[in-house]
Image 1 (tube, rainbow, N blue to C red):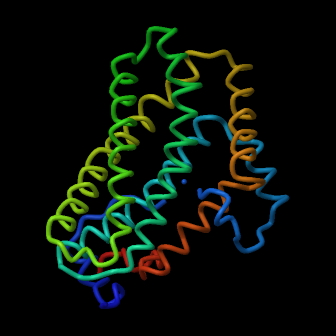
Image 2: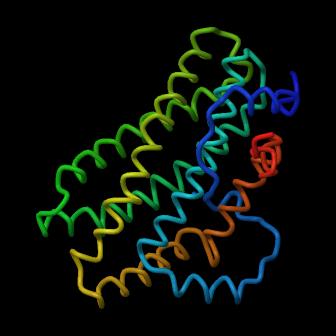
Amino acid sequence: MSDPRLNRRHFLQHSSVAGAGLLIPAFALASPQKDAAGKKEDAENISPAEDLMREHGVLNRVLLIYDFHLHLLGAKQTFDGSVLASAADIIRHFVEEYHEKLEEDFLFPRFRKAGKLVNLVDTLIVQHKAGRTLTAQIRELSSVATLKYVSDTEKLADALRAFLRMYRPHEAREDTVLFPAFRSVVSAHEYDALGEEFEKKEDELFGDEGFFKVVDQVADLEKRLGIYDLSQFTPK
């Protein structure tokens, strides 16, 4: 199997990559030691909107991983499917089962009750469901050892392409429209309380400093692909 790092320069020249900045279940929580006290203090001061937006930052880094694999598929290059499977697992457990669940349980109902951005909320819910279907397809196909069948390769490329096409405008619309409007549908006290509730749920699901553990996991995948170094994305 060829080394994806050999294709990095070609990838950077010929693919359009957006995003620079979600968790793993209990099976992969090991990560380097961090300054937990400082990070915990920062986390306690994060508003609900900022919390959700920084999670979108990790989503964007996973989208970069998807972009890179889509390039490899287009170039008919083989790769280690475990990296892509791990990226899909982060989407499943951190984005879909945690981040999107927060939106569906705490944000969307309040916008509906207030009669604000209801059409947007309806579209976002439909896209959440579509995303879960695509994630299942990506996870299943990335587990195929060789992707030697053209049909499997095409199905995986189509699923990655569809996920990328939907989630970039999806999260951008939430960041610029939905999240900034959230303060207008709740009281100041409720807004602050929700920030604490989000942090509590994150700790319950992923352990103390769960967000930073997820960031570490995404970074590890980027390093395995040779796309971790940010400077490589600077135009020459």
